Image (cartoon, rainbow, N blue to C red; front, side):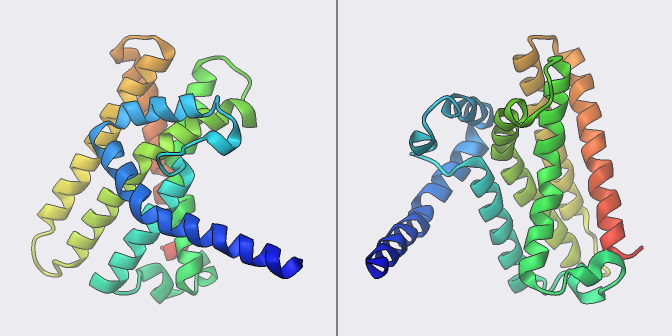
Length: 224
């Protein structure tokens, strides 16, 4: 009987993994072309029963995770091993293989949806707890994934131009920041029902906090 349960579990796992081949491109396309609608979609899905959520897309955290795994795989094949794993300096000594580096990367980029979601909850003057934080965090993951993909691509472009001009990578990084920042202004304006100027203040504050945390933790792990 236990063996049959194991077979059924493996059957469900295989189906789930293979379905990613369809639903990952679908989710990525929608997040790129209709990011705000995807964020609204995520909010709406939170009201459904757990087994009925995200039936035609990937769940937001899984989408972000798979995007970062894909980024890491491309980086390994194009650029090689990351500097944090290679240098083994500072807290980077704790990151000694690809699995732990992927987890670190997920933690880094998850700072953005976490801080954005926390800023929204505070601006609403609602108690900050797991319940109030979950929906905005999930919706933010849908736009953080394309942002992470673009930032990772810009990093690879800059590493591929030793001694040359990293302008393409820098231009892509700037475009990613402008795209992500613009979405945050619209998102805060929509959910707080305020003007875009006030929304820009909320978005800027959260963006600066996230970037400072991202850079500071990165420097600790690199050992600078």
